[in-house]
Length: 68
Image 1 (cartoon, rainbow, N blue to C red):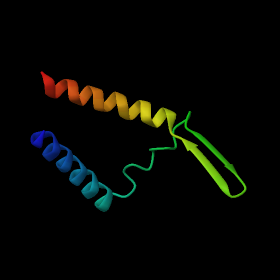
Image 2 (cartoon, rainbow, N blue to C red; image 1 turned 90 degrees about the vertical axis):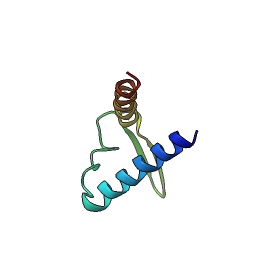
Image 3 (cartoon, rainbow, N blue to C red; image 1 turned 45 degrees about the vertical axis):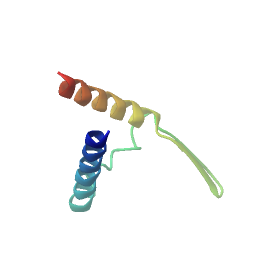
Image 4 (spheres, one colour; image 1 turned 180 degrees about the horizontal axis):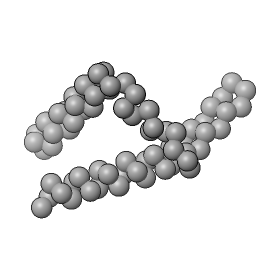
């Protein structure tokens, strides 16, 4: 379990560094066709359906590459 926690920490650190030095790198996230955004008055509801599918696909490919 400690190994997975260290890997997760390194991934979060790398993501933080990327977001700090390249703020526009993930600007596509949440703006893909198929992401549902409902805004009315003072309330906002947001469902990033397609963005989560893309993220899930990418993470599945990466995890399968590391398992082999």
